[in-house]
Image (cartoon, rainbow, N blue to C red):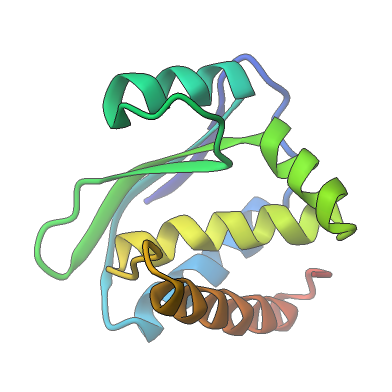
Length: 143
């Protein structure tokens, strides 16, 4: 089950049912099964608090993924700072929704086991994100 909630911020305008189908397809293509996945949209202040508390990092980030997967079934809580997604989109001169979709699937790819701590792993992550964003077009969602 995939759910979307917001915490002290407006829920982003996304096509939830289509996004859920897309996420399920990406999970399947990664040879995983879907468990419970919750997206929690938050502010920069909340993501900073989570970063400090759980990761011992004192900086903002766009996403923090808590992985509760068991064997081949992925589950987790994915916290996304909409403030940082917006500032990243502005900084990169790209569409906000495109950046949001990239971050949505970034968390799923982490749950599927894809890391991004080294330049090599980041390159693989970016390639997988791009492939997933290409698939999103099949759901008549503009990326």
